[in-house]
Length: 105
Image (tube, rainbow, N blue to C red; front, top):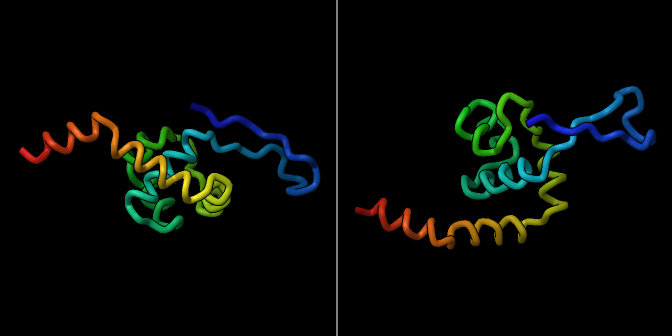
């Protein structure tokens, strides 16, 4: 998946042209991974950049990993409560309960 381009308003970043926009799915998956692993934003960036499984989970593929500063801004926009609620919903999903029960045997 290619990141889409977002045209700036001309007020900031003069001379840089278009900047890549982080897709919502990528941002949510990266924030979820950060929350689950209890990583800092910098650790999350390093780990996802160097791990094929994390890149696949986050739907990044061969694209550039969003940097820590970008995820800080997106995390603030989304809010810690939203990320926590997303985590709780995923963990309490019926398939997650079956998976946890199966992994105990």
